[in-house]
Image (tube, rainbow, N blue to C red; front, side):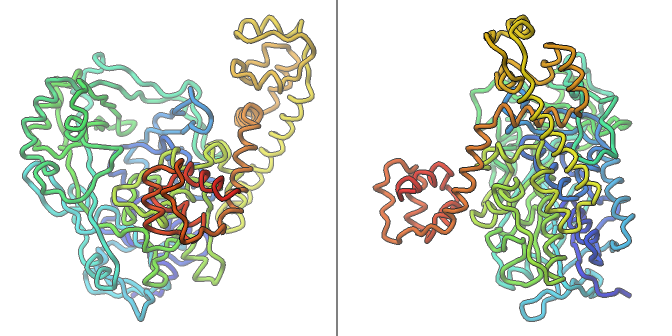
Length: 621
């Protein structure tokens, strides 16, 4: 009935889809197994892609040749570049998506690849011979052979849904949990744990009074995620809206705290610290009189609305009564209540950097099974697992991204070397070299690598080379083109910056924080004409490189220095307690784990990049 596959991917969420796509595009024969063909790439929680640091990950996936960025562009209803008031290291693209179209487009994309087959059924076990995985077994008892297996089970492994005092098995509302794999893996020697996540109620947008809310429009000049030119930026966008909870809402919610599974001990797993439930926020931040609520449409044509910021597992009647006390929600109709879900995960310290397990050869884990949270974190792990499964099957060197090359590298390095006991979410603060890992230059960092793998197309590489050439040409122009005080000073005064007394290059002027590259055309018609030759993305990247040239150079030097320190030995008898500048946590962890090298020390949870710098100084380096 089945041929022997190169790769079997178990689970068709964001990790599973990227894994199947990557391995198949590179030439592997792939089987994507899912319990429900109608929920491939389902946006189980909020209908959005990207955000702080997450947007950088989507750009990196795209630069390597993955699909998340392209599909987001095809199905977005709003685009915003977050943190534009901060430095470029913090700029993060985010898109509101059409949830139904996103899932449909992913499925059609996978169906268009002849190397991808599908099977709809629960996978109840993996087949292991010796210490090597050789396939999977379905709930019907069907054995399907393969050279490697990638588990991307999401929240389905022994999933348990909580709403007030009610609890029932499920991997998502209306969908069954998956059983058998956890127990088998534990028998094979893996350690497992429990985590939890939650989701807010969905409501009928027709029942909301938007005049009582603050409108949140998309960017006036929206961008997109993919570096490919196939999809054009949005011309029309849907607005999101902002409202707030209040004292009355909090009082109503508190009436149900005794029935909250989170507070009465029924939920054992740890939830995401940075995305707490509304009851957790009220409990932890008792001094706050209100909390922000983002009202997010789920698509172009549906009336369903996602109530971001109101994640809860309280009884449904408490949820409903509290919602009605929010400004604009007085007449709300609820489609379904929020809920919490507990699920099994496997501490990722049991993996290699390729995401292959240490115990069972050719078995890979990706996504929430590794303790992460978020579509983007899952998708990039799936991509890397798919790439490495194909490479190993073909006796090729593994593909690993370093911390200085991408947020993907930061994420995987954190998981493998530090582990996590709470849902891991990516932030820009987790990266030591975030000025190097910007959202605008992911193609320069990773597209040549993706092309060498056979994943990024020739078109991508050609587009990148054109962009690099144009950026270099624009830099040369700005450094060579000089302007007289008589031409510049009136505009400089208008911008609130010092006038010049001699001929000055445009690059020198652009280093000033008050000036932007799109303001230079005000200086002269010749400059205006010259800049018109360069696309917007080239102008933006050139401006960043010129403005932050010294900082970028400093990070590049630090990155090289850190790499050279990777094998620097640390004496076992080193007394960390006497190094006063180290943080208390670093002293404790270094004393406990006794790392043999500086590189190993840098990957101990609780030892920060600042602590590593202090150690380098202490060692005379």
